[in-house]
Image (cartoon, rainbow, N blue to C red; front, side, top):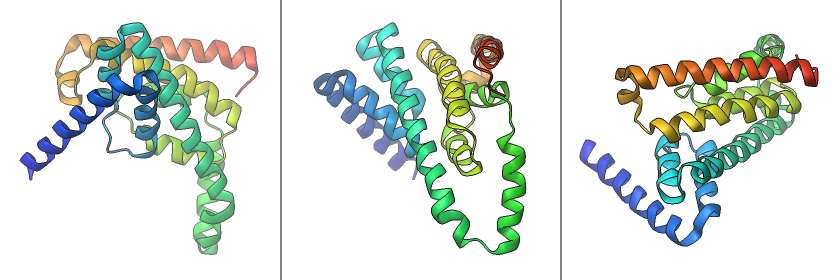
Length: 197
């Protein structure tokens, strides 16, 4: 089983490397858009591929734009589906509970949402879906996404390590803490300037 997964990942990386050389930056962005919808795809590897193919600055820019587009599209999809389909299929008691929790989550601050998005090990797919379903405003989600993903992509582009390696490397942990702190401070400034709560 492990060998089959390793072979699959190897084939995926070979495929991606080949098409990055042909498709250029647009294919690099497409990988990150696809990752926002298919959580099993490895974000850190796609960022590393973009950085290795296009260089640090362009690779980070391509990855940031791609992941922001993908996450926002995923958010919009579930935002639309929640009103039209998801709530209609729930029983009345379940819907009332979900709506109660949704009201609490909807009131998450911009800084709180940025913190969630910046953490490299929190599944962005889940954040996109929940944010869409509970009805977080588009303005707040997009501002949080642009700030949080910027620092997360820099982390993966610069550190470029796997989940387990990052947990055991003190420098990687320090980079995460610094990225989160800077993202949090910027989100506070943006929150005041744009009047987003």
